[in-house]
Amino acid sequence: MAQGAHEELSARELEILEAVVTGATNQQIALSLHVSVNTVKAHLRNIFEKLGVQSRTEATLRAIQRGLVSVPTPVQAEPHAPPAPPEIPAAHTLVLPLQPLQRFGVMFALLLMLAIALWPTTRAAPTSADSPLIDAPQSARVNGTPTVTLRWQTRASLPTARARLALAELDGVLYAIGGLGDDGATPRVDAYDADRDRWERRADKPTAVANAGAVALDGHIYVPGGNDADNRVLALMEVYDPASDTWSQAAALPAPLCAYAIAATRDGFYLFGGWDGQRYLDTTYYYDLTSDSWQPRAPLPGARGFAAAATVGERIYLLGGRDADGDLDLCQSYDPALDAANNIPWHTHAPMSTRRSGHGLAAYGGALYVVGGGWGSYVAYNERYALEGDAWSTFESPLSGEWRSLGLAAIEGPQGSFLYAVGGWNGAYLNTVRAYQISFRAFIPVQ
Image: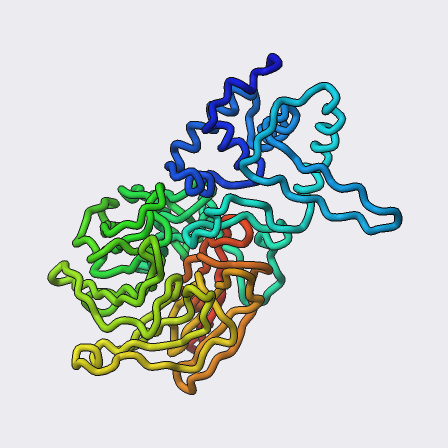
């Protein structure tokens, strides 16, 4: 590239290049600059072409070489003083092109960048990374490290790594719908046959979505709300028919909503809490399958999002979640019959042993199984709640480090019943599928 070629970059391209140097994903850049992910991708293609590079790493090094971004110069340490850790380059700081006398500083900056890449701390990201709808890059020390367990088994990987997906089980098949990956929200749908341990691509959802849930009712899968590829919170509800591999629409939600807890009943399903784009909510909505309509119900005892819900008998259990003050350890149940009689429908049970949000929840055999969760830190174990006795116990996790925003479902098979944990976030988006055996089936020969 000829000297001064960096002037070909527009002001917007320079902004995006600065964010790339900090390690920000396309999703985070889009939020920071208030543009769509597709717009970010288009700008990146232009940046790569103008800089003559093929990757974000090459673009980062070229940007430093040519002085398109600045790297702080460390202060000389006092004799015998311990060396100070390298600082992460500040985002959105531009400098003039390098002069000949500054070339030595460029070489030092390149070495500094290598040190930053290996330094065991969280990478810098735009301020918008604080949004509850995206995930910020973490240290490599927690990136999906497997642990040795006796009852967790590794199954065929999810075709694309993603978290914040909707997962539903219908007739022994898991449907992984949408979710968030490195390129933002996706419309992708994949079906997993547990008996054959095989994934199959299905028709894309018409609208890309993340931070949504799904339930199976009457042979169809309902996916209400969520947020789209531009992080707009949605009110629409799209319905998938596995038999014909087609999508349709049903009644829209009363208001845009994502990050809710969802649980099905005999003739419909409930949405509890969630995020409306500005705040966590305490709302409860019921969708009536027969009338294709939404109805408000008694609100939650407190506003929250990223909780999980499961139906056991005539009650729905709502666990954990996140409010303005952080993660919650709550275990509460909702009784629709009490609500219909205008009585208080909420009951509080023994709390979990640790606070969790973005966790998976499944009910089986009179127990609730909680997997993953944790926002500011990670939890080292999973939990089981016995409804009879109102008591909690723990069981091992197949991953070390942070694990949240996964899909979880229980399936009965020829060898017994399994929990299937699909995808999630562990410092990076995961494509792992883990199966935990919760019951065993023995075959006794007949003489």
